[in-house]
Length: 139
Image (cartoon, rainbow, N blue to C red):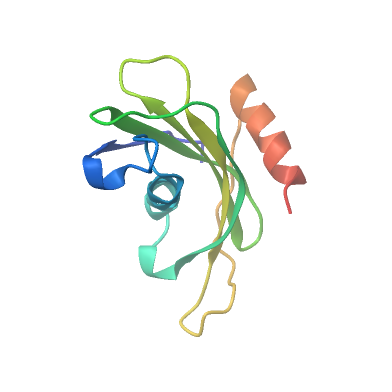
């Protein structure tokens, strides 16, 4: 399969803010993982997917009250039972991202043990090749 970008959108409301009046990192992390999960659940059964690790969740600029937080996620690396997803947040109508990072998910059986997912990536895009290279080095 070729990496497919999934878009996930949230409105930043007052209950999502920190004491500085910008998007609270904890709320952003929740949405970040949700966006990554949706990318994996678009190709595998949701009941067999668990989040194992967030890698380098990096905040580069604040997200303000009333902004539309648009997350873009895509699977960039697969192992035998693991799936690594790159996620970035770009506020709607802005070119620069505010947050980015990687998440590792694991495909599990009914007992919670890792099982092979059978996914294979066909990466042809130069940007996706770079994301794949970075994801391979994450532990």
